[in-house]
Image 1: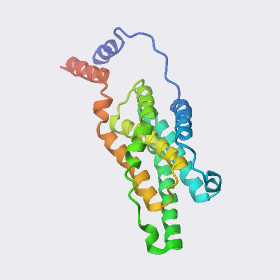
Image 2: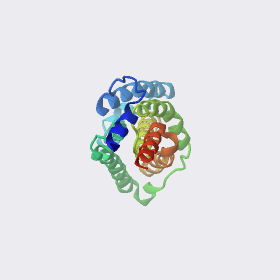
Image 3: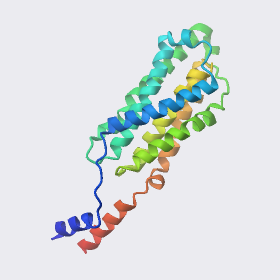
Image 4: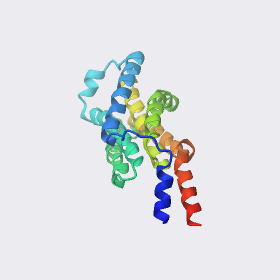
Length: 227
């Protein structure tokens, strides 16, 4: 009887809906649109003059590619978190590429020490990176948020955290392609650090941003039938 009541509650006044695409496909759509926007931003700010020589550097190339892969895999994870039937590990797959990104920066720090001694670890104050990454990431963040809300975000903190990571990692990659700042510690603290900080702050507001009214109504209705 309880199951019948729950089924009736779920199906009352339900209009036909189109099933969501696979999380990977939705991530690719988001990434393609966001990449066009980022390309326009890089074109506006100007590609760094030493781009051709830097892209031939394995450490720099690994760093930038890892940032892009972190972005797209984090987006896929955010969409997976909005699909309750998806495997939980998909939500944390971006951690691997985030670690590769951090590892590339660590290698850069070692190279600076090897070339310049301990003074190579002295970081310049590039605090402008935080607001710049935030500003660049806003359109991509709004897009992924609108797409995530079409799902069933039962893990709001993780979902918002991954969405923020996807957007800010993409913005950091754009900044790396435009700004000629190669002091590894500065990049680690002010660019990579900004991504981690903004991701952490955004995840705290997961339940506020992804307040799923239907979920709360269904739970309340279910509890009422149990009584």
